[in-house]
Image 1 (cartoon, rainbow, N blue to C red):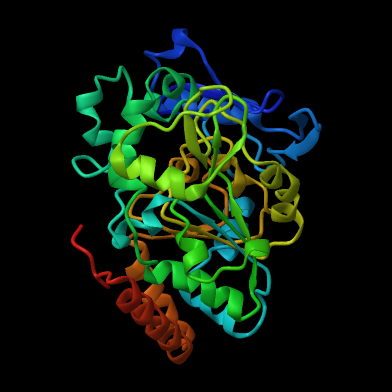
Image 2: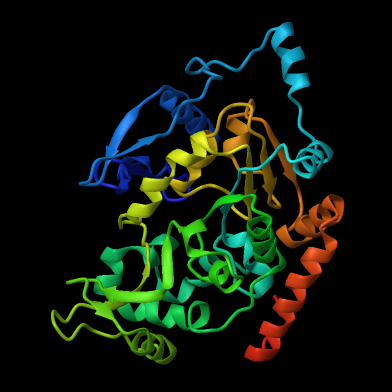
Length: 366
């Protein structure tokens, strides 16, 4: 469930479903009840290809409408399972963690100068008043786009038409790759900065699509990116030569299906992960928000985000550690503790060269 717009994700038709009756219900208690009701082992078919996604194999079952209680023995066991940053660093250094999966959100791109969605005042949703939307998410729905493509194109001028430099966090993911530790990086971002940082295509899942290709929203015919970029820069919608529907970048809107590759790959989070790193995301958009539930109970979840995601306030028994800082600051701390300084410096020099080549600021004004 998405607590921001009160929509549910349907794994049968692979899209968000909206229930107007839930508009006024926005309490955390509801989120807790829904989480409790979802516990269990449920195999659900998604898309016409009937891909299996198992969301809730969570051992810490809680009775509906009851608070979590634990015995003294369970408390002792939880104490043994407490994770610290020092333990994570020690295990990475010793080679005990060899299968790292990254879940990334808009927060890893903020220091590149790209606003996130929800930060009051500076976030994308805070600056959509001129479009007179009943709710900000409407701008990113395919139904609204087909009726009012000019709003998206005007907005995209600021977000998609500019060139940005990958952040230190992007290059940290690259460093995990170069050291042979990265199993996969799942990103909600559509800015393509993971690609620009050198993360290999086979290791990257762009769950919400990418702005680096484009198609018609009607007949799905491919659109040349040069034409799409020019249209976005001008703010004038491009329409399909065949069916006359508006064209758009291949980013996934709220009421569109996620890429097949996302569903094809998520089983590995359950079976091939010994450290899950969650970066720059509040985990509020389904179905991406369910991914931290998939690894086994003993797999640490390292959270690099200013706020702890609501999921970890509900699922308190999930083994996790929250570093309360912006992603780049946390990454620099990790690099220093891991003694990866020299390797990271090489990547930072590569970043500097990219900045010179594209005439970009290493530290843009935010």
